[in-house]
Length: 211
Image 1 (cartoon, rainbow, N blue to C red):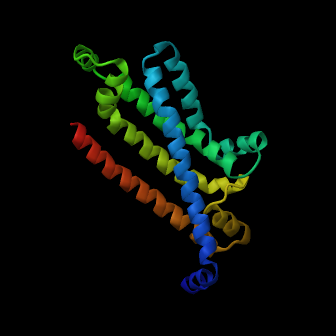
Image 2: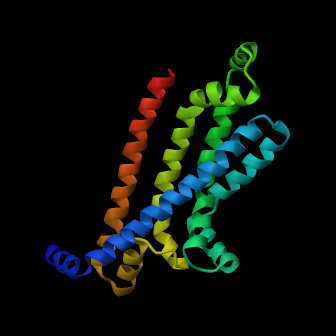
């Protein structure tokens, strides 16, 4: 096995790193897009009780849909390639970020808002300067969950032409080649572990800062 890996990297190191970079870029971009969409939306619906339940229920439905099904639905609607894979993974990343953001702001002590209002802060200043820092630990926890899920789910993006380390897993299954399976599975597992540890450390820092 080690000899096979050494022989592969001797001639195909650039191919491996290209796939690894594609996987990281796809995962990171989808998480950033999900944050840009879901954090403002979570704040908005936390103040709109009439639509909050409908939005949260719809998002919870998305959580039970398998990753492969989301990617399969993206293919006939959007075609194949990086962009359809990115949009599908962004959809998968949204539920934990949106729900955690909504929960953090919804459960905010009303006295905090009243105190900020009494100090002359506008609603936007209250959100940015007071509520957001207090909500940050719960939001980071949601991003941590989403990042691990997306790093794993990105391995399926190859099925709709998204590239990434999933290429090795699919080739390994098709060719009954354990080395290819390891080339895909091990780096993906390591990326997920690094993401989990990194966000856990960040969460501790943020919690200490806000407490």
